[in-house]
Length: 237
Image (cartoon, rainbow, N blue to C red; front, side, top):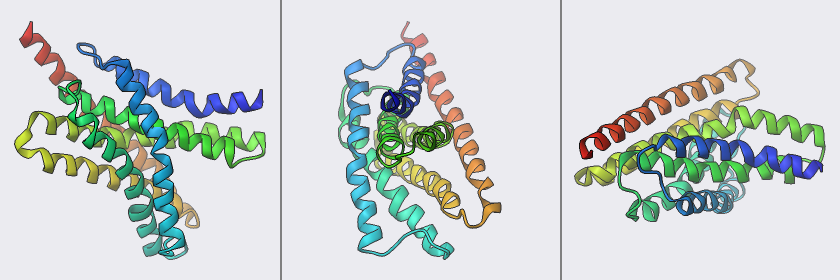
């Protein structure tokens, strides 16, 4: 029973966020099979991301430490870059090429679905697999529901916004796609950097500031594409 509860706590918050973004696309919702495919790939992509992070830690000897520069490098180049790269690869080289991806809002919907699959599997690793004490696992689960899961969604909104623009602006496709990827890495890196600097307690507040700013900007970018989708639909009708 405890295992089932922890699995629910790990996965359901991500599913709710996927459902929310799916419902935002009121005029031409994406096929369920594509939504599920993105979520599953996101979950699978945690494995190569972890392997890249292990390489950085074990082979390059880069990890969070009392040295802010080392911690900065670890947060941005090892963690944020590895995780966002895995999400970006599938979004760019598979989803982006599909005919179902045909308007700017689709970039955000698909990007968030990939990211929520990643966040759900990451939750399973932290809550179910790596934590033996049930109460501690619950505490981690509740904490991640309020922080890590929405953070991954915020990073995905930034990446997806520019992927959506790239779809309708082929002349700037590469630049826009790379801009979205870079912005996701920067936001993710900042978020993790302040977490890893836990030995400087006064700086942990910046973790929440980064999260709030990322969510606000992500919501703004999403609403821009929602409005664009609405206007396009009205013109067609």
